[in-house]
Length: 440
Image (tube, rainbow, N blue to C red; front, side, top):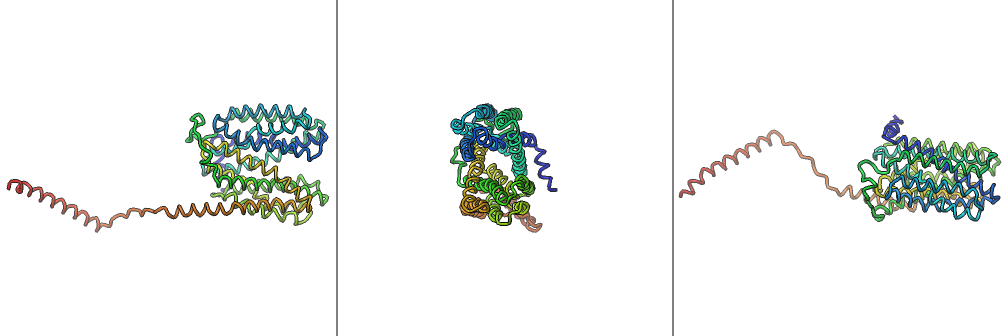
């Protein structure tokens, strides 16, 4: 019974192909950050702060580029954008491994701006391929496969970079991976519009003021806050285990945390009606705050991460689902690009927020800091969400309900028939009388 929503969703045309190709395409993208960090630290002999600046440059470029690439998909179609971004990113990784540090910073911005939009394209295509009744399990599958990509990508990147090959070879491997990913997406050519929606060739345009509304901005804020919590938890786990002398268990704890998220995402995809992303963010943030105070043993830390971890994938799923329902098809690419930017910005902010709290007060306070950010954003968004729900309820209540027609009883039907017969006889009598009146 639990698998029924997933079986029905995967049986829809092209859904399984899109998820499979997107999962593979995301692996080199997920490996990019760790490979770039190891390159700056090892090959360029710089510190982790300098590596963080390069990562921030790439993040800024990606945040600005995602909605632009999405808008191009809305206007020109998917394949031209895939050709542009695949070629540009392959060149970026081929060139970046040979650049000095001062040149790598601006080039990273350009590389991020023209990054292959595998994440947003997959979500846009899922919205086009699935009816609203199957969106929730479809986006749950997307979140779970994204988790798998982020479990495999960094591990493979570290494996290549830390071996005798070195980070430069790992960057060349990323170029090959991006090339294969771009070719795979180009060959698959997943649809960005549903069959009943106007195709890209129709040239339909939707003004931003029609969809860039407070509710959409609120979903973006919740999405960003969720990834702030996730990225900050990553850093805080490392800090707590390092302080307790159990840093060797970091990989296992991270894997278990990802497993909790996968289980939560799977369970959420089976529900009939999803929850607002805000209703999932608030408990996730609240449950993250006390994690660091539960003890210093790795197994206890992993256990305390279960409740918050189980809400990770459902929160991202709910935000993707909400955007797919509120945005018109002609603007879906740009909207999903902005959603991807919110995810990216949250990841970029989560580490520094947690790191600042750890450096100031200690490892356990990293969880408190990012959890507090999540709670604060949820509380800021909550009044607007409550107003919207009250307005929706009021509109539903003010719509008059028409009473259904009542079938007449046999007695009423007999009386009505007698009345009709009487009227007919009266009309006939008047007709007979009219000629006599005329002759007079």
